[in-house]
Image: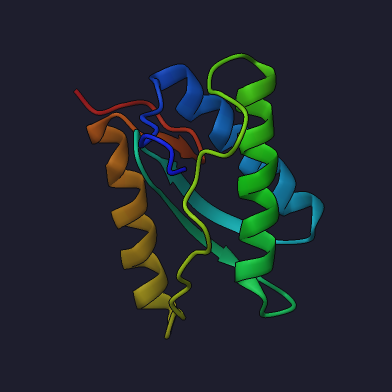
Length: 119
């Protein structure tokens, strides 16, 4: 049976963001930026083993568990299966991707690193 789509509240987004950052850093990933929106996420990070799908899967699992343990979502998962990783070609591409991710704060996303919202 398929589950109804999950929409994360602002508090849920913040918790998911914090847990994802923690899980990725624990695995040695250099996290440059994360945005967690109501229905999706973006991550910019450097994966030393070039296996982002596995490590993002671990971070998604940990964040989903934290959300269900906090009684924010029902047990059984929050995120879609798998993820799509795109390579960053150079420093200019990295800066553009980071700015794109952090701009999601203006749409209500929880972001890492934290920065004050623009007026």
